[in-house]
Image (cartoon, rainbow, N blue to C red; front, side):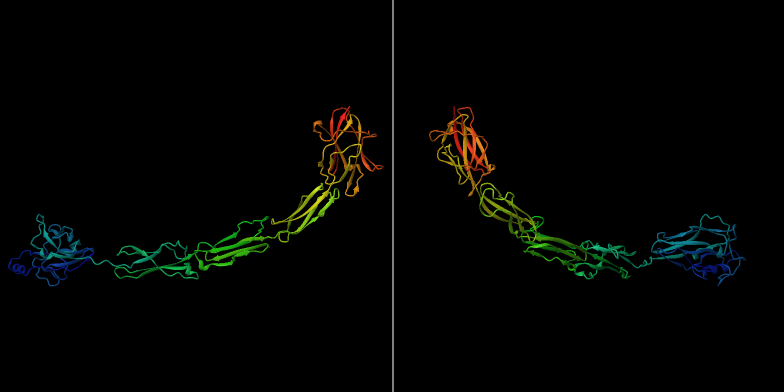
Length: 544
């Protein structure tokens, strides 16, 4: 609050002074004044300077007796006490107004003064409202009820209020902060937040703009991996600044390298995970976030064209994003078939008499140098009469195979017979032992129930066989109409003795006494078969 404290002053016009000297002894006019101007009481309007938005101003409104003491009193004290006021019995009431309340207001609007003493005055408060000039005037209330003697002079209490524009606002320094990124933080490449400059400025208002980014530094800066600084600088419209801020953060590779292998063919084409042909292994290693930081270990492409045992190839890689691997693949190749296939216990190639071929099936052996031999199997083996091809198949663990063959022949027995009394028009093929017949049938006529001796010889090569175990006989009844050929030949002789098969050392032949069935009219095909399945056949018709 603006306060101007002035000493008491007497403000009388010079004209009033002269007039008073001519009057008889009466109460003189007292002066209503203010204390805006020190040590003077005059009619010149004092000024109260105020400022829009500033503190109110104050002055003291009081009554100054004409004869009061003080500096340069203009009038002598002819009244005795120099004051027309005396406490509650003599007082004045005054109106205080502003001619321009829109510029300045005054309070209080009404005051009461009952003593001529500045210390007993009333404080007026003037408040600035707007730029301009206003006059504050003081007048005695028209309807005042007072017995104060004498008169009062009021113009000395009038003063002017000059309200100046508000002072320019104080300019406070701006503040700037970096937002979006945090100092010391790490962000994945491609996912770094946008760095912004946030300005706080009381006078200019808040604002934001993109931060200035430094070049990326570090060993992998060429990949966009490393440290980066986001900086802000701001100067306000009043010239204060620059306000600065900065943060340092890291840009990192979020993922390790990627290793891809391509094996051709993709799966082993042999058995037991063996390859039997050429194999290629190609590696692809990539790191799109930091390719310049990529380092590989192994990862050489392979072309396997020769047989090899299980061999492992691997690939590892590191980058600014980390490490991966080893990624491995194991290749074993065997494209070579087994060698040295050989029979064990097999007959030699060529001809063999029946019974001279080994009864046990032969086996075989072979070499499987790389993957090892899995099996060797013999097929086609037989001891039967005829031509046979023996085949050995060797298979290694990779599935490669090799074969070897032997062809041999088993010769049949040589059969001679039936001798007399049986007539033979159809004779077994004793050369081949196949039982095939040539010529026409000879039909032997025998009496039902008659014993017919069947005589024959058996040779294995040049050796005559005498053991009855080499012979088996079969008698089969057939339809008589099946017979054709030569006229009937009647059996002349009758056999004697038992009917079991025996070898007659005297005659040097096998003899089987066949007891014919006793029912007449039947036709029979009598076949003697040896154990090599060679045979001879005779036909019979039985009569009464």
